[in-house]
Length: 129
Image (cartoon, rainbow, N blue to C red; front, side, top):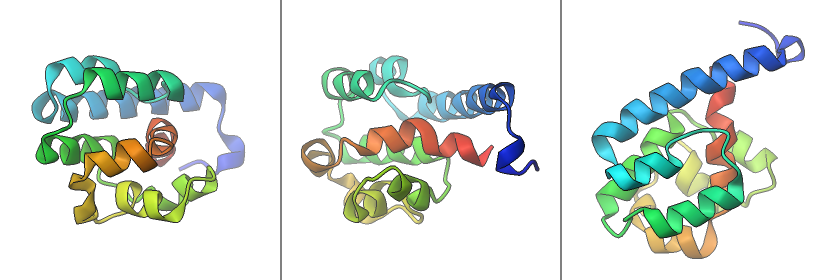
């Protein structure tokens, strides 16, 4: 494994592509098809992700929402990365830490208080590859 100071743009793009493929494979079996097309990718613009998440994803089903969060995290603890992006403890703990907090079923809290976590979802898991 390379130390962070030796990563190149090409290394990051390779990790991004690899992680996105894993994210999409997970989403394809667990998240509704309409949502998959718009948000099951890493490196997306946060504003785009927020808009797509709210308008294209049917997250009123708690299980569907939890699976989206699980897929996006790649079953990894991304809490520290989330916090390093300036996102609050409560949101990072519920949506980016492992094990997944049972409160993750609450998509209303996510939409009303924690949409900034999409920034971490779009970036943090890639750093683990």
